[in-house]
Length: 113
Length: 113
Image (cartoon, rainbow over all chains, first blue to last red; front, side, top):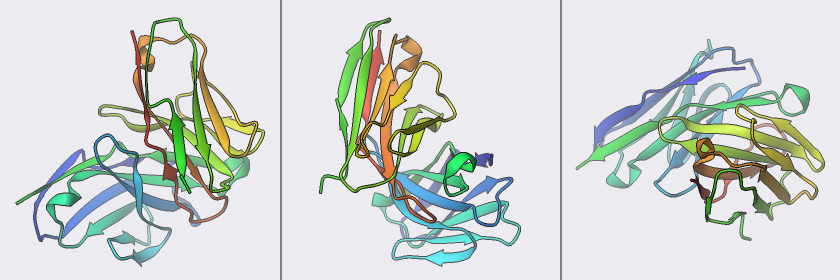
């Protein structure tokens, strides 16, 4: 089962691009990575997911290099409201006896004015 | 469409008491999960279910039991609560298959004295 490791905290300023990297060993070809955002006293909410190369949606991008030993969440032009904890999740298998998942411990992103 | 709901929102137990946390989802999702969240530990998987009538252990299953008698409900039981089970508990659900995100409930804050 993949173990996911991410930085405990990061600081940024409004308008900057922020990149948060998650390291994960033993990720197979069809295993995928999902990133979640969590505000205090709320449940996590989905940001983006993917299993190879690059994925982009309206709020973020996700980069997974060819060796698949890490993934990077990229948040363009952050604002104060992006201050939150960000979690990466590695999911192995698609169901049945081989299905496993593990969350990273989370990265507290603080965006300063 | 309420999404994922959790009952109760708060609860205080004395050591040795028992209780059941209820998670309900109205999205017809096959997969359901129970996590606990403690400071500095991120989200840790307690138990999960890939379908009605099936359950499996996660990372920290000791002291908890679960049941999935109906597809829309996932119950988490504490038979004899201990102070170490003081935590915030989150339930989540998702569709079966590849590249589907989890939808989280608002959480249950449990204190065991």
